[in-house]
Image (cartoon, rainbow, N blue to C red; front, side, top):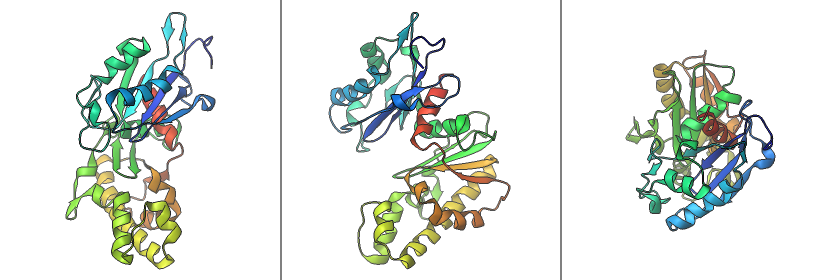
Length: 288
């Protein structure tokens, strides 16, 4: 799609803890236009100006102006964040402290010379599910739950008719909260409990762990995730659960165990089809 198109593409953006990824998203098919994809590392604990300039470097290169219009921007952003006003509320999370209380929408609009109304922010977990519903693993269903498994635990649902962040990461779970048992840090903690050794991430764990250790870890992980999902499914009544995030890439190690423990066998359990593209498409979809 180019500037002569009758309908300009959207710009879908995913803001992570250490990066910004953005691309044009076709406004009709809601597919990422791959050759436009841009990604830049962000020094998330630097000054506000350094952070914002990293974002602007990417966004400015994707702006199209034609026939008195410009491309609109949908941004998937982690919380806490005032999504309507565009004000960052992140603090003491080892990312974006310098943006606390800053009206990001206002600054981006001024620097990009576009109206504030052409920029929409959306929760990153919501964006993931919106993307999978638009053109991914949930596109053939009406009711869905989205779960992202990584450094944190994302949880979203459209069971109410609107896709919303359910924030179940902080739901009471065993002797703590769900995120402490269903995230990367649980894997690393469990591995250390069993072996006395530390690993950097789940990918390294899979490389170095003995088979018996991996089996023990994934058996317990599937228990934790099934308890969480059984409650979530009972409340939201989805037709499909879509699982994304880095831990979802270990799919073959847990999906058989997990599906055996899911009580409602009518619910499909699917791996993300879109991965990082889901957030880009979901953020763009919020503009439709």
